[in-house]
Image (cartoon, rainbow, N blue to C red; front, side):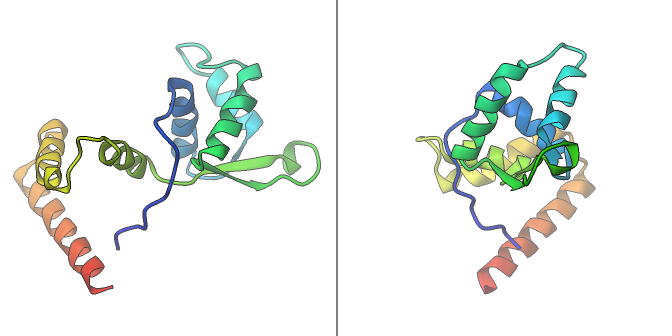
Length: 142
């Protein structure tokens, strides 16, 4: 089934995108301290500092990129947890389709470009195209 479109704000800053990647990679709700631990454990050094963390989270909440769950009381087990409101693929699709120059007629070229940059085999292409066809047909029936 093709997912419903999630309405979110504009493009993310580099720091916001790093925070989103942490949430996408976690694949579960995570707390602020866990996010900061991932940031501080980066081999390249922290992507943002602790003082900017709250501003980043609040901006992502305001733009509807993340959802806050829980958050009653204090302490590690009671901290607010965050989940992404959309998947990584949905985010990149949103970025492409938000462009003023995007047209739905670009979709076949985008799929071909994804194939080119992904180095997929002919067999993988066939399986992917069958999957796309099934999703589109299922969506048309709803």
